[in-house]
Image (cartoon, rainbow, N blue to C red; front, side, top):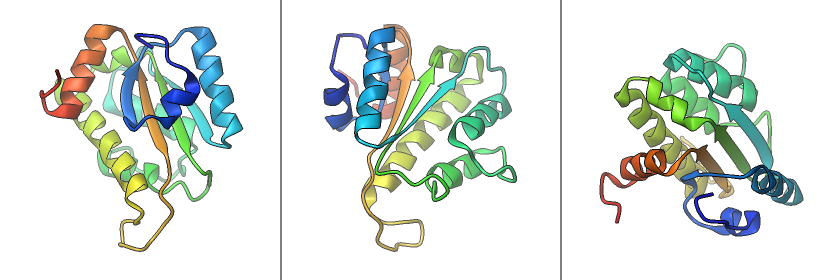
Length: 163
């Protein structure tokens, strides 16, 4: 992380979509804390992605999406907001080498960050897509990257309103 923060504090914090810079020890601590909470912990290595389809394929493998799921933004949002085949009291998705997202067209990065945020909102809303009541579930997307990349992600999350 850009400044050392305990894994417990990170998983108690409200920014569910954020950019982090983790040491190996911090990543292991995060994984241990997630396991302690019985959260699903998925690591997605985004190194050398070239296309949106590459991104979708890596996410699908890491989150064990159905093989028949589409490889587009709508399918991603549908699958990531319905993990009924992998029930857990919470989810942590660590996107390693997230700076590789900069290799995609800028609108893809913006769309991806927006969809991550929308997925988290759905998990936190207490309602499914049909408006039925479901438990509020912690869901974290952690994009690993250096400070310049993190500023870009923060700007995308805040609509350019970051301090």
